[in-house]
Amino acid sequence: MPTPPVTLRRTDPALAAALERSTAQAWTLMAGIGRATGEPAPGITRAAFGEGEEIALQAVLRHAAALGLEAEADPFGNHHLLLPGEDGQAPAVASGSHLDSVPNGGNFDGLAGAVAALAVLAAVRASGLRPRRPLRAVLFRGEESPWFGTAYLGSRLMLGRSPWAEIGALRRRDSGLTLAQHLAALRHAPGPKTPLDPAGFAAFLELHIEQGPLLESRGVPLGIATACRGNIRFPQARCHGAYAHSAAMPRGHRQDAVLAVAELALALDRFWQERIAAGDDNFVVTIGEFATDPVQHAMTKVAGEVAFTLNLGGTDPAVLEAARGVLAGAVARIERERGVRFALGAEVGTAPVALDAGLRALLAGCAAEAAIAAMPLPTVGHDAAMFALSGVPTAMLLVRNAHGSHNPQETMAEADFARGVAVLARAMLRLADGEASGTASGTTSGQD
Ligand SMILES: [Zn+2]
Image 1 (cartoon, rainbow, N blue to C red):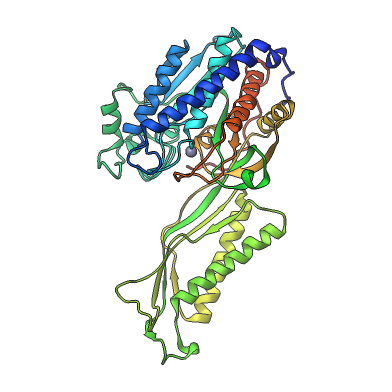
Image 2 (cartoon, rainbow, N blue to C red; image 1 turned 45 degrees about the vertical axis):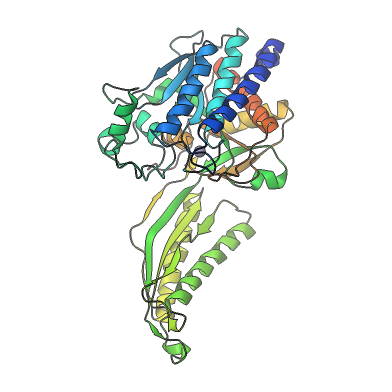
């Protein structure tokens, strides 16, 4: 994307002062929402399409209304804060994130990006600027997967990436009610469930807390995401061997399922180390569950069966395919050598999603202008991925986090939040004033 010319607006003292004010207010708003959604302890809980999410939404809408921002709901209960541009027909430059959380999560995952977008719109409005394109802050519902067993519900439905008939029938795991029932109870979005046209978005920028420790460990406040990792997952893998006496069975006669899965894990770990040695730190391997059968296992028995999960992640489809090859080769070899049988079970997963190179460069340029350090790094799946898959030029700004996400210890410094909002504001205004809206996102073959 040809970067739009630097406008004077980014150095407008009225805008700078307004942004400082709106950022501080957004931080206070976020803290208040955290206190209001802190039950049950520890951490915060904002159930998707449910109570905590609704508390957050109403607080954000009250704050936005007090600042004179218009709001509207879409058919799926997401809310949009609007700031008109000079060109009423132009597609919007949008930012935002989700209001729900995982159970007993941290306060910043999702909410920080929602209130950051609000802070930008509030500052632009307060300073009296009128950009060419409209600005839009999107407050998504239902991004986290623990509630309905699948992620990005609000953005997926809004952009028409999943049919309502299918998703509306999903049941929330705690309540047992369907998404359609939860949405009806919220009374925000009656009427036909027609998705929005992605062409209405010129660009989407999502600010989000980093979910890992990389920025903290490098001493860098901001990250610019290169891609959302995709994954190949086997949630119900098994290795079948044979139970035997621990003292009597010689090694050559054993069909030890524990050692077989351990050997598989190490084969994948070796591939991972080779990727790192080759300068690629985008690939990850996780065996999050590894269990012998408690009914049959014993200290004095060779394990005849192991149940495990296998989760391969990466930003490059070719690397994921190479990992699949390593997995298949290791399975065949270990079966032969150890007399076991692997049943990996159903495979699920998502394709990696590349983020827009032009917008990444724009964010990097805006950070450099503001003398804020930022580094590129891959990220996980977010609402932003749904925009990228829909052909909307999309990028993500990540904010340093001392303790990782999806836990009560998640931490963001107010100064880092302010740095993120400052870069986001510059980039949004540049896009709103510029002639170009970004290159088409380099998405890989998309599947949710
Ligand atoms: Zn999130």
